[in-house]
Image (spheres, rainbow, N blue to C red):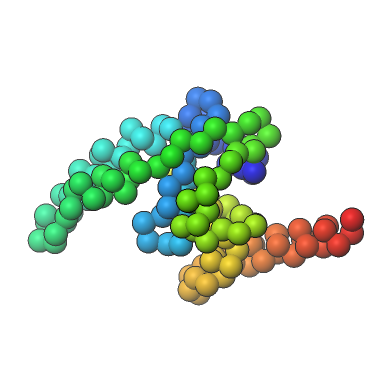
Length: 143
């Protein structure tokens, strides 16, 4: 389920209830965003190619375009429920819980155990995730 703040942002960005999902290119998580970000991706591709040229680095425009535009458009209902495609769950090693972390023009969706495996620069997100997991477990024990 898409949390309320993320749901509102995606709904406004997509002018409807469409969530774009893709595997993050460096981290073991998913990236989520609204449809309006599609307009930025061509410009991002151009910037990345220009930066690579300035550095004299190799740049595979086709592969990077495949990565940037390889997202799925997933509908969600008014309460934020959506169906996570199985292949994305597998890629991000998602089993049962999800942790949503905001990051500006996009957000990340983590399996808690994958987030906990990240380095010390993720300390704040790891603490928030651990707290939410503990709260959920406590609620489950009260039932």
